[in-house]
Image (cartoon, rainbow, N blue to C red; front, side):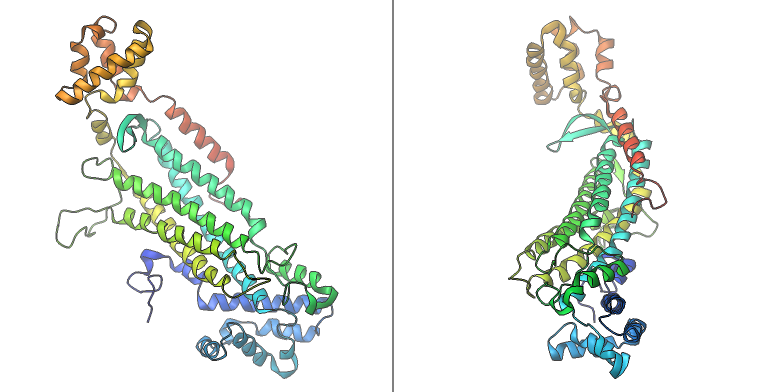
Length: 460
């Protein structure tokens, strides 16, 4: 019976996707180990280390479907070694003559590390694809709402008007940087390893580096400059990237969660007929999808720390460090896949409420435009004097509960330098957006130029 949310039938689709679970499944993990063994055998045959017929047999038998995973698992428990039962099973399939050449010269960590990188590269393709899809949805929303006014808030309080498109463009720009980071990391991260016992290729003789190069070429991985059994920076870098992408998604979800509050009601996550918000309060339309999206950022962030802990390795290698990666990397990829799938659905169906945004902009009776009025008074009164006057009137408005507009119109110092008509224009939030729309355009242009918004795959 499953005992982890990733695999529980009633919860698994809240915490992952079937596609990403398959990448990190028992079957696929086993197959990746067998892929490495097959590529190793073929490379060794090419340089004359093992018979060509043996290599062909090993490659033809290195298929997970030919093996009994439960039996292998029981044998792992018995021999207390994670790979030997797999090697024994492959050896048996290859027969007494050719089976003796299985795993020739390699050590367990060579196979497991390289297999993990094959899985991670497979997961990477899904992550890049889905981050791109999220970026496209963000670009669409930014374009649609480039001039839709909304209250910009700092420290949780209304500050100045901005646009909803600007708010979304901030996230879009982050996502494009994440995509660049993912692409830039590929040549560093996706490397295999075949160093042998302590990484010196001793068991391969002088042909070790060439066997490694040929094996990795077959597998579509980089050959490293030096054995990385004790260098876990590749895993740590990729875990960090997953953490940053998740952080951006979590920030976005938390922002929309807050904008969806009853008192703000500026956006709403997609609502489908039959969706239930509460078991006791029938009226509730809860931000369930946004909460689910935001909730997965914490475990991914803590997994980043776990993978970084794995960088502390005893001597040339140990079994204490790398096991943290076995836990954290699959979990993080699966959780992030769920976040990306949820983000795509939320953004595609997000209900944006410009009328409520405008209502909230006017909630302070003009106080939100105090900066603008101050600068309008700066020339006739001087900037510092204007600040003092407007501060005084702002406090009066707040403390006495009088709309700021009325306080301004009642003050002779204001009437002397600004007409009522001019003041009404100054207090219109939709005309004090700064360069927000133009900045959105700049972000969109840069995103388009990056190539990441195109439907077809452009980068490795």
